[in-house]
Length: 163
Image (cartoon, rainbow, N blue to C red):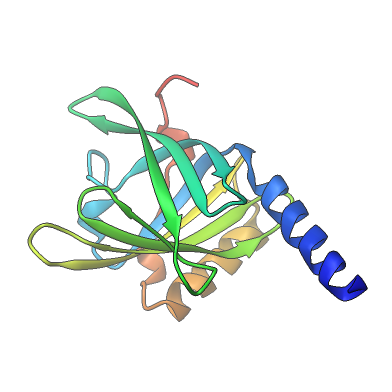
C-alpha cells in the first residue's frame, strides 16, 4: 500500500510541475516546412493545464499567420497507454512527454494532416534559451526520433506574440 501511495504522490507531483506557464523554446520536425516561420505547426506555447487527474491536458499557444498572432487552446485526451495524448489541430495529433527537467519539458508528437501526410515533431518548452548542453541533448533526441538535427528551429527569439 505504501508503494502505491508513493507512486500516486510521485505521479501527482510530476504533473503539478508540468502545469503552468511554458514557452516554446525550440521545435524539430522531419517536414521542416511545417515549422518554418508561418508554418502551420510552429506554435508559441503559453501554458499547460492538467484537468481530471491529467486525463485531459490543455495547451494554450499562439500561431502566427500572416503576421497576426492567434491564441488557441487545444485539449489532449489521455489514451489507454497512460502516456500519450490525442487531439485535433491541423489534423490528428498524438503527443507525449519524453523528457522532463526543472527547466524544460520535451514532447514528441506525430501529426497527420488533412492530406494524410505524417509529420514527426519535437517541442521543447522552457523559460529561457537553451544551453549548449541542452541543445546537444535535443539534437540527439531528434536524431533518435528520425528527425535530422538540421531541422531544429529555435523559436523563442521569433516569438513576438503577447504573453
